[in-house]
Each structure stands twice: as structure tokens, then as C-alpha cells.
Image (tube, rainbow, N blue to C red; front, side):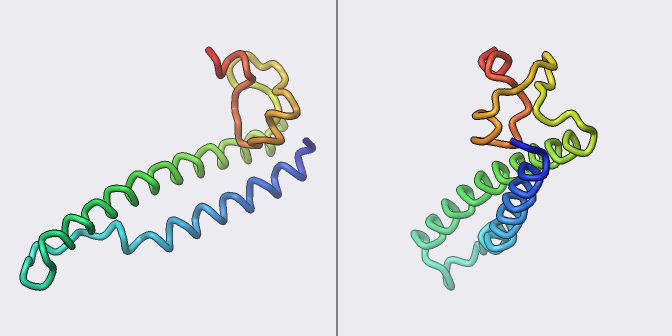
Length: 109
């Protein structure tokens, strides 16, 4: 995969993740304790949704960090090489996930 294509794919994916984070922002807000306005079961459902959204948001944030690191590697002309052993990362692996920092051997590790 060439650097230009990888950069375009990474920027598109980053924008998608940032959009998803923004859309789910309301679900991560604190849940009201007033049981007169929200029933106990509805509050429990809201807490469960909030916990799932927080976990999903953490995963998205981690993916954005990986993408940012890959974009830096592209700019530094290190894209496509394992950050651990400096061997070339297989083309198919990069096509599957252009943000991957490791070759298959180091990923199995």
C-alpha cells in the first residue's frame, strides 16, 4: 500500500471515529439520581448504556491514537516498517489495517 492511499484511508477513518465520538457524547453524561423523573429500571438502562458508550469511546480514542501515530510514521517516512523490529510489515496486513505498527511476528509476540 502506498503512503498516499494509506494517509487518505487513515484520515477518513479518523474523521469517522471523531464523528462517532461526538454523536455519542450525550450518552456519556452523568445520569440524574432523581427517581421521581426517571424510574429505577430506566435509570439502570441509562447507566448500562452510559457504561457501554464509555467503553466504546475509550476504544475509539485508542484507535485515533494509533491512526495519529501511523500518520506521523508516514510523515517521517517510517510507514510500513515494524516499530519493534524495523522489518517491513506485510502489504496485506497494511491493507487490512494501515494503522498497524507491528509486523505479524512482533504482534504475536
